[in-house]
Length: 71
Image 1 (cartoon, rainbow, N blue to C red):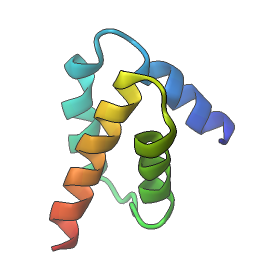
Image 2 (image 1 turned 30 degrees about the vertical axis):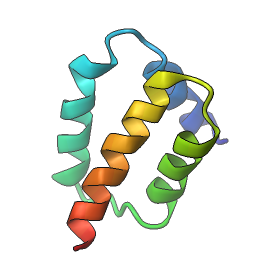
Image 3 (image 1 turned 90 degrees about the horizontal axis):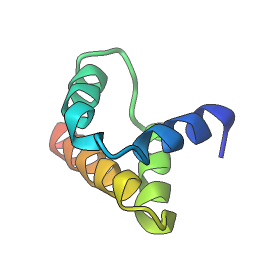
């Protein structure tokens, strides 16, 4: 995991995850960030490998948005 990925992971461990996950998702949608392949790979890694609930919740939300955008 990259240094930025690790920093994001630490943020996702916070108890107030739900307070900012929607805003983060909206910012990703409305930005010029291309989710494929790197952001998709990162979210998939979080979903399948994280032992912590916060990062898994974020990954589910992110992958759900990416799936909706791809259709």
